Each structure stands twice: as structure tokens, then as C-alpha cells.
Length: 494
Image 1 (tube, helix red, strand yellow):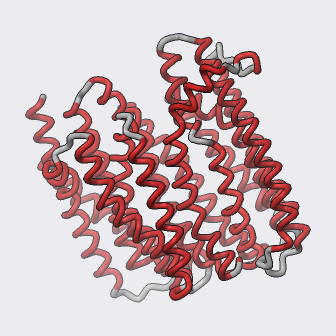
Image 2: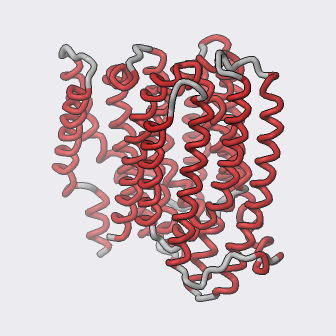
């Protein structure tokens, strides 16, 4: 029951955040124009690389706080949180200095269109401070995750998303648009961190983040656990932000917009699937600690099946109706954005289910090889994007992301996970993959039938199509539920 509550809390916050972002994209495009919005996305993609300075300490905070809280070792808990906060204070200061340097060097990049260079520089400085503040305050978010108060953390995300929406509508205007957006983001980050800190102290009354708690042994322990998690995080940052940076430098910031639209829709689908992975991590850790192979198998079957069903369902829908969604959402009729979305969502049909295996490997302490696989994927992604953009433009960049993801994760990660976790590949395929095929086939038939109708852009038709597809998918899924192999296996074990 707690597993379901955690998933619903994460998904609820994501839905609200997604809806806010969904509304703001066309609003910002119409307010600051395509050139201004392209510059904004390009800046955020570059500044996003500063996320590498988290050094993998997010999972470290969660792991050790949960461990020491369970054992009521409050001194060790405070030493861990204070030491991580000290590291973030140092890295945040470095980010601010790098932001100053980037702001000075911005004049050398002739890709800003008609956005004033002064606005670009000021926005860079504000975004740098925003990243530093968010980094220092994130240690309290790790505390909330450690005590499994996903509901509180999700409530903060919903609150800040609504504040960002209100401030953007009230303050954004064409003049100084990127500066206004950067100032809004910094304001929202400050509010988020204050709320997170207050709730963290309420959940652990003995929590104390002070310089006197910073401890060399705690730092050594945290760095030892974080090293390979850092490689995973670095790889994720490279994959997420490389595409728009490559496009911005090689084709200009205006070319970023059509790619980002397709990418943004893909991310809106990808994020809730990743939230399922967040839930898998502690569950797989418990199974590993108890040496419960059957429990781990049942957990992975359920979560792999769920993510595969959702990812493949969104992929089918994006093929048939992605163009209609984009034209309704942004008013732009750009086939390139549609096919960027299709390629990126299609890659999630592989990535989302295999993320469950990655989390299980991480829970079992198999971090090194997994991290190196992710890093290799990120490097190939960068190389292919730089190569294919020369011939196929932004579609080449999308192919550069999809190809290494599918090939490396299927060819390297999957067999490694099967072997390391001692899973029965045939049984996993039979219980996790095969039951998803009938509902997906029903959705495919439904989409094919509806696609022959005359459809015009509009939220009414889109919502009706989506609801019908959900009914077709869900009805068949419920129909075959009693016959699922993993249910029979669980009953036999019981």
C-alpha cells in the first residue's frame, strides 16, 4: 500500500508540474518570441551542466540519513547532512564563479539572435545563483526522501510550480524577458528551499546542520559511496542537455525551439516513468538485504510491465497524434518537432523498463559497471549528435540520442543485469513483457481507426482521443489481469 501511495504522490506532483510547464511553453513563446525563448532554452541547457557539481551526493544523503535514523545515531546523521551541505556550499560557490566567467564570455558566442547581450549576461548570473542556492538547499530534500515523506516533497513541488506560473503570467513581458524568467526561477528556488528545510526539521527534530558537525570520516564515507553515482549523474546530465547545446552552437538558438518542443513532450512522458524507478530503489534494497530473490523478481515484473505498458502506449499515441498535439499546444505546424518527439519517446520504450533493472543493480551495490555503461552511452550520444547534425539537422541529433540508448542498453546493460541479479530472462520476458502486448495491440487498433477521421487542432478532440485510448488500453489490461503469469507464480509461492 505504501508503494502505491509513494507512486501516486510522485505522479501527482509531476502531473501538476507538467501542466504548468505545458501551459507556460506557448505562453512564453507568444510573449518573448521564438528568438527569446530559444536563447532561454539554450542558456538553461548550458547552465544545466552545473548539475554535475552535485557529485552524486543526492542518493548518498538519502541512503545514510535513512540508515542512521533507523539506528537512532543522531550524531552520525547530523555529521552526514552537515558534511554534504558543506560540499554543496563549496560547489555552489564554484558555480557562481563559473557563471561570472560565462557571463563575461557570452559576447564571444554569436548565437543570441536579437536578444540584448546585457540581458543574456544578467540572466546567466541569476541562473548561476539559482543553481547554487538550489544545490545547497537540496540536502533537505534528501532528508525528506530518506524519511519517505514523498507526499510532503511532492506538495512543495506543486506549490512552487503554481507560484512560478503566477509570477510568470504576472511579470513576464517581451522586454527583458530572459532576465525576468531567471529572476522568477531564483525566487521560486528560494521559496522551495525554505519550505523543504522547515519540513525536514519537523520530520527529524534533532536535525542540526552546523559547521561543527562537518566531519572528515563522514566526508570520506559520503565520497566513497557517491563516486560512481556521480558518473551516473554526469551521464544523465550529458544526455539531457547535450542535444540543445549542440543545436544552439551549430545551428543557432532559433533552431533549438522546434527540437526542444519535441524533447519537452518526451520528457513529460519520461519523468513519471522515472518516478517509478525512484520507488523501485528502496524496495529492491530491502529484497537484497533479505536475500529475497523471488521478492525482487515480483517487484521487477510489476514495475517493468507498468513502465513498458505506459512507454509503449505513449509511443503509439505520439506516432498517430503527436503532430496534432504539437500544433494544438504551440500553434506551430512543424513535422520536425513531431518526429523528434517520436524518436525520443520511442527510445523510452527501451529505457524506461531497463531503468528498473538499473535501480535494482544500484540497490545491490552494483554501481561501477552500471555507471560506466551510462557514461559510454553519453559519450556515444555526443559523438553521434555532432556527426549526424551535419546531414540531418535536428533529426540527426534525435537519432544521435536514440541509437546509443537502444543499442548499448539492450546489448550491454540488459545481459549484465540479468546475470548480476540472477534473473531468469525467459520468465521475466514471459511475465513482464508478454502480458502487455494485448492491451498495446488494442490501443494500436484504436489509433489506426481514429486516425482515418478528419481531425482539427483543439484540446477537445485531443482529450477525447486520449480518453478513448486510455479506455481501450485499460479495458484489455483489466480483462487479462487474472491470467497474468506473475499472479499465478505469486499465488503458488504463497
